[in-house]
Amino acid sequence: MTVGPLIGYAVTLAVLAVAAAAFDAALAARPAAWGSAATAPLREVARLLTQQRRRTVLPDLVLLRAGVWSLPAAAVLAGVVLPLGERPVAESAVGVVWFNAMEVCVWGAVWLTGWAPNSVFPLVGGYRFVAQGLAYELPHMFALITAALGAGSLSVTEVAAAQREVWFVVWMPVAFVIYLVSALAMAFWGPFGQPVGGEVAGGVRVELAGPDRLVFQAGRYALLVVASAAAVPLFLGGGAGPLLPSWAWTLVKTVAVLGVLVWAGRRVPAVRMDRFTQASWLVLIPAALLQMLVVGLVVI
Amino acid sequence: MAVVAFWALAVLSVAGAVAVFTVDSMARATFALLVSLAAVGVLFLLIDLAYLGVLIVLMMVMEMMIMAVFMIMFMMNPAGLMPMTMVHGRRFALAVSGAVFAGLAALALLTPWPARRGTPPPDPAHALGMSIMGPQMLVMMVIGVAILATMIATVVLATDRGRYDRR
Image 1 (tube, rainbow over the protein chains, first blue to last red):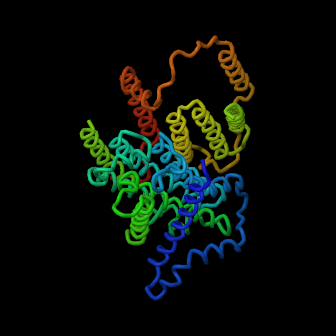
Image 2 (tube, rainbow over the protein chains, first blue to last red; image 1 turned 180 degrees about the vertical axis):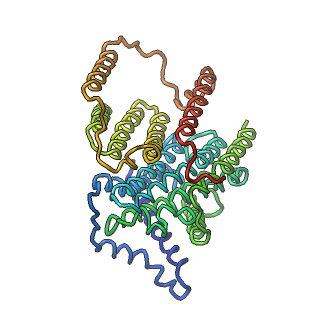
Image 3 (cartoon, helix red, strand yellow; image 1 turned 135 degrees about the vertical axis):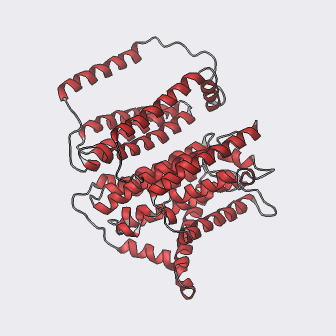
Protein backbone atom coordinates (compact mmCIF):
# COMPACT_ATOMS: atom_id res chain seq x y z
CA MET A 1 0.00 0.00 0.00
CA THR A 2 1.36 3.41 -0.91
CA VAL A 3 1.20 6.44 1.35
CA GLY A 4 -0.56 8.65 -1.23
CA PRO A 5 -4.15 7.40 -0.83
CA LEU A 6 -3.72 7.32 2.95
CA ILE A 7 -2.76 11.01 3.11
CA GLY A 8 -5.49 11.88 0.62
CA TYR A 9 -8.05 10.06 2.76
CA ALA A 10 -6.90 11.69 6.01
CA VAL A 11 -6.86 15.21 4.53
CA THR A 12 -10.28 14.78 2.85
CA LEU A 13 -11.81 13.46 6.06
CA ALA A 14 -10.38 16.30 8.14
CA VAL A 15 -11.43 19.02 5.68
CA LEU A 16 -14.96 17.66 5.34
CA ALA A 17 -15.32 17.32 9.12
CA VAL A 18 -14.30 20.96 9.64
CA ALA A 19 -16.59 22.03 6.78
CA ALA A 20 -19.52 20.16 8.38
CA ALA A 21 -18.84 21.88 11.70
CA ALA A 22 -18.65 25.29 9.98
CA PHE A 23 -21.92 24.68 8.08
CA ASP A 24 -23.58 23.64 11.33
CA ALA A 25 -22.35 26.82 13.02
CA ALA A 26 -23.65 28.89 10.08
CA LEU A 27 -27.09 27.24 10.36
CA ALA A 28 -27.23 28.21 14.01
CA ALA A 29 -26.08 31.82 13.40
CA ARG A 30 -27.88 34.84 11.99
CA PRO A 31 -26.97 35.77 8.37
CA ALA A 32 -24.89 38.70 9.66
CA ALA A 33 -22.67 36.30 11.61
CA TRP A 34 -22.05 33.79 8.77
CA GLY A 35 -18.53 35.13 8.33
CA SER A 36 -17.52 34.26 11.86
CA ALA A 37 -19.33 30.90 11.60
CA ALA A 38 -16.87 29.85 8.91
CA THR A 39 -13.99 30.08 11.35
CA ALA A 40 -15.97 28.87 14.37
CA PRO A 41 -14.66 25.25 14.23
CA LEU A 42 -11.03 26.40 14.15
CA ARG A 43 -11.57 28.80 17.05
CA GLU A 44 -13.25 25.96 18.97
CA VAL A 45 -10.23 23.71 18.30
CA ALA A 46 -7.87 26.39 19.61
CA ARG A 47 -10.05 26.90 22.68
CA LEU A 48 -10.23 23.20 23.51
CA LEU A 49 -6.49 22.70 22.99
CA THR A 50 -5.71 25.29 25.64
CA GLN A 51 -8.50 24.32 28.04
CA GLN A 52 -7.75 22.19 31.09
CA ARG A 53 -9.04 18.66 31.56
CA ARG A 54 -11.91 18.25 33.97
CA ARG A 55 -11.50 15.60 36.67
CA THR A 56 -14.47 13.88 38.27
CA VAL A 57 -14.43 11.86 41.49
CA LEU A 58 -13.17 8.28 40.97
CA PRO A 59 -13.34 8.13 37.17
CA ASP A 60 -12.30 4.99 35.29
CA LEU A 61 -9.55 6.71 33.29
CA VAL A 62 -8.54 3.63 31.26
CA LEU A 63 -12.07 3.16 29.97
CA LEU A 64 -12.54 6.90 29.48
CA ARG A 65 -9.50 7.17 27.23
CA ALA A 66 -10.54 4.01 25.39
CA GLY A 67 -14.03 5.37 24.82
CA VAL A 68 -13.05 8.88 23.73
CA TRP A 69 -10.34 7.70 21.33
CA SER A 70 -12.25 4.81 19.82
CA LEU A 71 -14.93 7.19 18.49
CA PRO A 72 -12.67 8.82 15.85
CA ALA A 73 -10.80 5.51 15.42
CA ALA A 74 -14.05 3.73 14.52
CA ALA A 75 -14.99 6.47 12.05
CA VAL A 76 -11.57 6.45 10.36
CA LEU A 77 -11.44 2.64 10.16
CA ALA A 78 -14.99 2.47 8.77
CA GLY A 79 -14.00 4.87 6.00
CA VAL A 80 -10.95 2.97 4.70
CA VAL A 81 -13.08 0.63 2.58
CA LEU A 82 -14.89 3.52 0.83
CA PRO A 83 -13.50 4.33 -2.62
CA LEU A 84 -12.56 7.98 -3.14
CA GLY A 85 -12.56 7.82 -6.92
CA GLU A 86 -11.52 4.43 -8.26
CA ARG A 87 -10.01 2.68 -5.27
CA PRO A 88 -10.38 2.72 -1.46
CA VAL A 89 -7.43 2.94 0.93
CA ALA A 90 -7.89 -0.76 1.75
CA GLU A 91 -9.73 -2.93 -0.75
CA SER A 92 -11.76 -5.64 0.99
CA ALA A 93 -14.00 -8.37 -0.41
CA VAL A 94 -16.25 -7.92 2.65
CA GLY A 95 -16.09 -4.11 2.77
CA VAL A 96 -19.80 -3.65 3.55
CA VAL A 97 -19.54 -5.92 6.62
CA TRP A 98 -16.31 -4.20 7.69
CA PHE A 99 -18.00 -0.79 7.49
CA ASN A 100 -20.88 -2.12 9.58
CA ALA A 101 -18.56 -3.70 12.18
CA MET A 102 -16.56 -0.51 12.63
CA GLU A 103 -19.58 1.74 13.04
CA VAL A 104 -21.00 -0.65 15.64
CA CYS A 105 -17.81 0.04 17.64
CA VAL A 106 -19.33 3.51 18.12
CA TRP A 107 -21.78 1.90 20.57
CA GLY A 108 -18.88 0.83 22.73
CA ALA A 109 -17.13 4.20 22.37
CA VAL A 110 -20.15 6.29 23.39
CA TRP A 111 -21.22 3.97 26.21
CA LEU A 112 -17.68 3.94 27.65
CA THR A 113 -17.41 7.73 27.42
CA GLY A 114 -20.71 7.97 29.27
CA TRP A 115 -19.93 5.36 31.90
CA ALA A 116 -16.30 6.13 32.75
CA PRO A 117 -16.49 9.64 34.34
CA ASN A 118 -18.63 8.26 37.22
CA SER A 119 -21.18 11.00 36.72
CA VAL A 120 -24.95 10.85 36.28
CA PHE A 121 -25.68 12.75 33.07
CA PRO A 122 -22.99 11.10 30.94
CA LEU A 123 -24.26 7.72 32.15
CA VAL A 124 -27.81 8.63 31.09
CA GLY A 125 -26.49 9.77 27.71
CA GLY A 126 -24.47 6.58 27.23
CA TYR A 127 -27.47 4.39 27.88
CA ARG A 128 -29.62 6.57 25.65
CA PHE A 129 -27.22 5.90 22.81
CA VAL A 130 -27.25 2.13 23.35
CA ALA A 131 -31.07 2.18 23.35
CA GLN A 132 -31.01 4.23 20.15
CA GLY A 133 -28.50 1.79 18.69
CA LEU A 134 -30.85 -1.11 19.29
CA ALA A 135 -33.49 0.86 17.36
CA TYR A 136 -31.50 1.94 14.30
CA GLU A 137 -29.09 -0.96 13.84
CA LEU A 138 -31.41 -3.59 12.33
CA PRO A 139 -32.97 -1.34 9.65
CA HIS A 140 -29.46 0.01 8.99
CA MET A 141 -28.07 -3.50 8.43
CA PHE A 142 -30.96 -4.38 6.14
CA ALA A 143 -30.35 -1.21 4.10
CA LEU A 144 -26.64 -2.08 3.70
CA ILE A 145 -27.43 -5.67 2.79
CA THR A 146 -30.03 -4.54 0.23
CA ALA A 147 -27.36 -2.58 -1.65
CA ALA A 148 -24.98 -5.55 -1.43
CA LEU A 149 -27.76 -7.85 -2.66
CA GLY A 150 -28.42 -5.61 -5.65
CA ALA A 151 -24.76 -5.78 -6.63
CA GLY A 152 -24.26 -9.43 -5.66
CA SER A 153 -21.10 -8.53 -3.76
CA LEU A 154 -20.02 -7.39 -0.30
CA SER A 155 -17.18 -5.30 -1.73
CA VAL A 156 -17.97 -1.56 -1.64
CA THR A 157 -16.05 -1.01 -4.90
CA GLU A 158 -18.14 -3.64 -6.68
CA VAL A 159 -21.37 -2.24 -5.26
CA ALA A 160 -20.41 1.12 -6.79
CA ALA A 161 -19.40 -0.56 -10.06
CA ALA A 162 -22.77 -2.35 -10.27
CA GLN A 163 -24.51 1.04 -10.61
CA ARG A 164 -23.04 1.95 -13.99
CA GLU A 165 -26.45 1.66 -15.68
CA VAL A 166 -28.83 2.84 -12.97
CA TRP A 167 -28.12 4.16 -9.47
CA PHE A 168 -29.39 2.04 -6.60
CA VAL A 169 -31.23 5.06 -5.15
CA VAL A 170 -33.57 4.84 -8.17
CA TRP A 171 -34.79 1.30 -7.58
CA MET A 172 -34.19 1.00 -3.81
CA PRO A 173 -35.33 4.43 -2.53
CA VAL A 174 -36.71 2.98 0.73
CA ALA A 175 -33.33 1.47 1.62
CA PHE A 176 -31.66 4.81 0.82
CA VAL A 177 -34.00 6.80 3.07
CA ILE A 178 -33.57 4.23 5.87
CA TYR A 179 -29.82 4.50 5.43
CA LEU A 180 -29.91 8.29 5.81
CA VAL A 181 -32.10 8.06 8.93
CA SER A 182 -29.80 5.49 10.49
CA ALA A 183 -26.75 7.57 9.52
CA LEU A 184 -28.18 10.47 11.55
CA ALA A 185 -28.88 8.14 14.47
CA MET A 186 -25.41 6.59 14.25
CA ALA A 187 -23.72 9.98 14.59
CA PHE A 188 -26.33 10.94 17.27
CA TRP A 189 -27.00 14.00 15.18
CA GLY A 190 -29.97 16.37 15.11
CA PRO A 191 -33.25 14.58 15.81
CA PHE A 192 -31.27 11.68 17.31
CA GLY A 193 -29.02 13.89 19.43
CA GLN A 194 -30.59 12.83 22.72
CA PRO A 195 -27.41 11.08 23.97
CA VAL A 196 -25.81 14.54 24.04
CA GLY A 197 -29.12 16.35 24.60
CA GLY A 198 -29.46 19.68 26.35
CA GLU A 199 -32.07 18.41 28.81
CA VAL A 200 -29.42 16.12 30.34
CA ALA A 201 -26.93 18.99 30.43
CA GLY A 202 -25.07 17.70 27.36
CA GLY A 203 -25.26 13.95 28.12
CA VAL A 204 -22.23 11.86 27.25
CA ARG A 205 -19.87 14.81 26.82
CA VAL A 206 -20.73 16.84 29.97
CA GLU A 207 -17.56 15.90 31.81
CA LEU A 208 -15.31 16.08 28.76
CA ALA A 209 -13.18 19.20 28.57
CA GLY A 210 -10.05 20.26 26.73
CA PRO A 211 -8.36 17.76 24.40
CA ASP A 212 -10.73 14.93 25.42
CA ARG A 213 -13.71 16.93 24.22
CA LEU A 214 -11.86 17.88 21.04
CA VAL A 215 -11.18 14.22 20.20
CA PHE A 216 -14.78 13.26 20.95
CA GLN A 217 -16.24 16.10 18.86
CA ALA A 218 -13.84 15.42 15.99
CA GLY A 219 -14.87 11.77 16.11
CA ARG A 220 -18.53 12.67 15.92
CA TYR A 221 -18.03 14.90 12.87
CA ALA A 222 -15.77 12.29 11.25
CA LEU A 223 -18.53 9.75 11.80
CA LEU A 224 -21.06 12.03 10.12
CA VAL A 225 -18.69 12.51 7.17
CA VAL A 226 -17.97 8.78 6.80
CA ALA A 227 -21.67 7.92 7.05
CA SER A 228 -22.40 10.45 4.27
CA ALA A 229 -19.49 9.22 2.18
CA ALA A 230 -20.73 5.61 2.41
CA ALA A 231 -24.08 6.60 0.88
CA VAL A 232 -22.25 7.54 -2.33
CA PRO A 233 -20.82 4.12 -3.38
CA LEU A 234 -23.78 2.27 -1.84
CA PHE A 235 -26.69 4.17 -3.41
CA LEU A 236 -25.53 7.16 -5.49
CA GLY A 237 -23.45 5.48 -8.17
CA GLY A 238 -20.01 6.06 -6.62
CA GLY A 239 -17.81 8.16 -8.88
CA ALA A 240 -20.13 7.92 -11.90
CA GLY A 241 -20.98 11.21 -13.63
CA PRO A 242 -20.29 13.24 -16.77
CA LEU A 243 -17.19 15.38 -17.49
CA LEU A 244 -15.54 15.40 -14.05
CA PRO A 245 -13.19 12.61 -12.92
CA SER A 246 -14.60 10.03 -10.54
CA TRP A 247 -12.87 11.38 -7.42
CA ALA A 248 -14.47 14.77 -8.03
CA TRP A 249 -17.94 13.24 -8.41
CA THR A 250 -17.46 11.19 -5.25
CA LEU A 251 -16.51 14.37 -3.41
CA VAL A 252 -19.42 16.39 -4.82
CA LYS A 253 -21.97 13.72 -3.90
CA THR A 254 -20.44 13.25 -0.43
CA VAL A 255 -20.63 16.99 0.23
CA ALA A 256 -24.25 17.02 -0.95
CA VAL A 257 -25.29 14.17 1.37
CA LEU A 258 -23.29 15.66 4.24
CA GLY A 259 -24.96 19.03 3.69
CA VAL A 260 -28.42 17.45 3.77
CA LEU A 261 -27.62 15.55 6.99
CA VAL A 262 -26.18 18.61 8.78
CA TRP A 263 -29.10 20.76 7.59
CA ALA A 264 -31.63 18.13 8.71
CA GLY A 265 -29.91 18.07 12.09
CA ARG A 266 -30.79 21.73 12.62
CA ARG A 267 -34.27 21.66 11.11
CA VAL A 268 -35.89 18.41 12.35
CA PRO A 269 -37.24 18.23 15.92
CA ALA A 270 -35.78 15.77 18.42
CA VAL A 271 -37.15 12.22 18.52
CA ARG A 272 -37.23 10.38 21.84
CA MET A 273 -35.37 7.09 21.56
CA ASP A 274 -38.20 4.93 22.93
CA ARG A 275 -40.62 6.36 20.35
CA PHE A 276 -37.98 5.94 17.67
CA THR A 277 -37.55 2.31 18.72
CA GLN A 278 -41.25 1.73 18.23
CA ALA A 279 -41.30 3.44 14.84
CA SER A 280 -38.10 1.73 13.82
CA TRP A 281 -39.19 -1.81 14.68
CA LEU A 282 -42.79 -1.45 13.52
CA VAL A 283 -42.26 0.63 10.36
CA LEU A 284 -38.63 0.76 9.26
CA ILE A 285 -37.80 -2.95 9.66
CA PRO A 286 -40.85 -4.19 7.70
CA ALA A 287 -40.23 -1.50 5.07
CA ALA A 288 -36.58 -2.55 4.79
CA LEU A 289 -37.55 -6.22 4.49
CA LEU A 290 -40.10 -5.44 1.76
CA GLN A 291 -37.48 -3.40 -0.09
CA MET A 292 -35.09 -6.31 0.19
CA LEU A 293 -37.75 -8.68 -1.14
CA VAL A 294 -38.31 -6.44 -4.17
CA VAL A 295 -34.57 -6.20 -4.84
CA GLY A 296 -34.22 -9.97 -4.37
CA LEU A 297 -36.97 -10.62 -6.93
CA VAL A 298 -35.39 -8.20 -9.42
CA VAL A 299 -31.95 -9.79 -8.97
CA ILE A 300 -33.28 -13.29 -9.51
CA MET B 1 4.67 -12.16 10.08
CA ALA B 2 1.56 -14.37 10.31
CA VAL B 3 3.19 -16.41 13.10
CA VAL B 4 4.00 -13.28 15.10
CA ALA B 5 0.46 -11.99 14.60
CA PHE B 6 -0.97 -15.35 15.66
CA TRP B 7 0.97 -15.45 18.92
CA ALA B 8 0.29 -11.80 19.69
CA LEU B 9 -3.44 -12.31 19.18
CA ALA B 10 -3.45 -15.61 21.07
CA VAL B 11 -1.73 -14.01 24.07
CA LEU B 12 -4.06 -10.99 23.87
CA SER B 13 -7.07 -13.27 23.78
CA VAL B 14 -6.02 -15.32 26.82
CA ALA B 15 -4.89 -12.20 28.71
CA GLY B 16 -8.27 -10.59 28.06
CA ALA B 17 -10.01 -13.72 29.26
CA VAL B 18 -7.96 -13.74 32.49
CA ALA B 19 -8.68 -10.05 33.01
CA VAL B 20 -12.44 -10.76 32.89
CA PHE B 21 -12.15 -12.54 36.24
CA THR B 22 -9.50 -10.44 37.93
CA VAL B 23 -10.93 -6.93 37.48
CA ASP B 24 -13.42 -5.58 40.00
CA SER B 25 -15.80 -3.67 37.74
CA MET B 26 -18.56 -4.94 35.48
CA ALA B 27 -17.62 -2.45 32.77
CA ARG B 28 -13.98 -3.50 32.72
CA ALA B 29 -14.93 -7.18 32.72
CA THR B 30 -17.30 -6.59 29.81
CA PHE B 31 -14.66 -4.85 27.74
CA ALA B 32 -11.92 -7.32 28.69
CA LEU B 33 -14.21 -10.03 27.35
CA LEU B 34 -14.73 -7.95 24.20
CA VAL B 35 -10.95 -7.63 23.69
CA SER B 36 -10.54 -11.38 24.14
CA LEU B 37 -13.29 -12.28 21.66
CA ALA B 38 -12.33 -9.60 19.13
CA ALA B 39 -8.79 -11.01 19.13
CA VAL B 40 -10.32 -14.36 18.18
CA GLY B 41 -12.19 -12.58 15.39
CA VAL B 42 -8.96 -11.07 14.06
CA LEU B 43 -7.38 -14.57 14.20
CA PHE B 44 -9.99 -15.58 11.62
CA LEU B 45 -8.59 -12.91 9.27
CA LEU B 46 -5.23 -14.74 9.46
CA ILE B 47 -6.76 -17.88 7.98
CA ASP B 48 -8.36 -15.82 5.18
CA LEU B 49 -11.90 -16.12 6.54
CA ALA B 50 -12.47 -12.35 6.29
CA TYR B 51 -16.26 -12.55 6.41
CA LEU B 52 -16.37 -14.68 9.57
CA GLY B 53 -13.63 -12.63 11.23
CA VAL B 54 -15.30 -9.27 10.66
CA LEU B 55 -18.68 -10.75 11.58
CA ILE B 56 -17.30 -12.00 14.91
CA VAL B 57 -16.03 -8.51 15.78
CA LEU B 58 -19.39 -7.00 14.76
CA MET B 59 -21.46 -9.47 16.76
CA MET B 60 -19.24 -9.34 19.84
CA VAL B 61 -19.39 -5.54 20.09
CA MET B 62 -23.18 -5.58 19.83
CA GLU B 63 -23.40 -8.49 22.26
CA MET B 64 -21.33 -6.70 24.90
CA MET B 65 -23.39 -3.53 24.57
CA ILE B 66 -26.63 -5.48 24.93
CA MET B 67 -25.07 -7.03 28.02
CA ALA B 68 -24.55 -3.47 29.29
CA VAL B 69 -28.27 -2.81 28.78
CA PHE B 70 -29.18 -5.96 30.69
CA MET B 71 -26.80 -4.83 33.42
CA ILE B 72 -29.10 -1.92 34.34
CA MET B 73 -32.31 -3.81 33.64
CA PHE B 74 -31.78 -6.83 35.83
CA MET B 75 -28.80 -6.48 38.15
CA MET B 76 -28.97 -5.81 41.88
CA ASN B 77 -25.97 -3.52 41.37
CA PRO B 78 -27.46 -0.93 39.03
CA ALA B 79 -25.28 -0.16 36.00
CA GLY B 80 -22.45 -2.11 37.64
CA LEU B 81 -21.21 1.10 39.18
CA MET B 82 -19.98 -0.39 42.48
CA PRO B 83 -16.78 -2.47 42.62
CA MET B 84 -17.63 -6.16 42.80
CA THR B 85 -15.88 -9.48 42.44
CA MET B 86 -16.31 -11.31 39.15
CA VAL B 87 -16.09 -14.84 40.59
CA HIS B 88 -18.34 -17.03 42.71
CA GLY B 89 -17.11 -20.27 44.31
CA ARG B 90 -13.50 -19.47 43.49
CA ARG B 91 -11.86 -22.85 44.20
CA PHE B 92 -14.45 -25.01 42.50
CA ALA B 93 -14.65 -22.68 39.49
CA LEU B 94 -10.85 -22.60 39.16
CA ALA B 95 -10.67 -26.41 39.26
CA VAL B 96 -13.43 -26.87 36.70
CA SER B 97 -12.19 -24.21 34.28
CA GLY B 98 -8.58 -25.38 34.64
CA ALA B 99 -9.60 -28.94 33.87
CA VAL B 100 -11.71 -27.90 30.88
CA PHE B 101 -8.89 -25.70 29.51
CA ALA B 102 -6.32 -28.49 29.93
CA GLY B 103 -8.66 -31.00 28.33
CA LEU B 104 -9.41 -28.83 25.31
CA ALA B 105 -5.76 -27.85 24.87
CA ALA B 106 -4.72 -31.51 25.07
CA LEU B 107 -7.36 -32.43 22.48
CA ALA B 108 -6.16 -29.71 20.14
CA LEU B 109 -2.54 -30.81 20.46
CA LEU B 110 -3.02 -34.60 20.52
CA THR B 111 -5.69 -35.05 17.82
CA PRO B 112 -4.19 -36.44 14.61
CA TRP B 113 -5.52 -33.68 12.35
CA PRO B 114 -6.16 -34.89 8.78
CA ALA B 115 -4.08 -33.45 5.96
CA ARG B 116 -5.79 -30.77 3.86
CA ARG B 117 -7.75 -32.11 0.90
CA GLY B 118 -8.50 -29.82 -2.03
CA THR B 119 -7.85 -26.08 -2.05
CA PRO B 120 -9.67 -23.21 -0.37
CA PRO B 121 -12.46 -21.76 -2.54
CA PRO B 122 -11.72 -18.42 -4.22
CA ASP B 123 -14.52 -16.75 -2.24
CA PRO B 124 -14.95 -18.33 1.23
CA ALA B 125 -17.89 -16.04 2.07
CA HIS B 126 -19.79 -17.35 -0.97
CA ALA B 127 -18.98 -20.98 -0.10
CA LEU B 128 -20.15 -20.40 3.47
CA GLY B 129 -23.42 -18.90 2.26
CA MET B 130 -24.04 -21.83 -0.09
CA SER B 131 -23.38 -24.26 2.75
CA ILE B 132 -25.70 -22.48 5.21
CA MET B 133 -28.46 -21.87 2.69
CA GLY B 134 -28.06 -25.32 1.11
CA PRO B 135 -27.55 -28.51 3.14
CA GLN B 136 -27.66 -26.85 6.59
CA MET B 137 -30.62 -24.56 5.90
CA LEU B 138 -33.12 -26.43 8.10
CA VAL B 139 -30.73 -26.57 11.07
CA MET B 140 -29.85 -22.88 10.79
CA MET B 141 -33.51 -21.82 10.54
CA VAL B 142 -34.48 -23.87 13.61
CA ILE B 143 -31.52 -22.59 15.64
CA GLY B 144 -32.23 -18.99 14.60
CA VAL B 145 -35.89 -19.14 15.63
CA ALA B 146 -35.00 -20.96 18.87
CA ILE B 147 -32.45 -18.29 19.86
CA LEU B 148 -34.87 -15.47 19.07
CA ALA B 149 -37.68 -17.17 21.03
CA THR B 150 -35.34 -17.67 24.01
CA MET B 151 -34.32 -14.00 24.03
CA ILE B 152 -37.88 -12.72 23.81
CA ALA B 153 -39.14 -15.20 26.41
CA THR B 154 -36.35 -14.27 28.84
CA VAL B 155 -37.13 -10.57 28.62
CA VAL B 156 -40.88 -11.11 28.84
CA LEU B 157 -40.50 -13.35 31.91
CA ALA B 158 -38.06 -10.95 33.58
CA THR B 159 -40.09 -7.77 33.07
CA ASP B 160 -43.72 -8.35 33.92
CA ARG B 161 -44.49 -4.80 32.93
CA GLY B 162 -42.22 -1.85 32.50
CA ARG B 163 -42.42 1.68 33.79
CA TYR B 164 -42.80 3.08 30.28
CA ASP B 165 -45.63 0.86 29.07
CA ARG B 166 -48.19 2.95 27.24
CA ARG B 167 -51.60 1.36 27.79
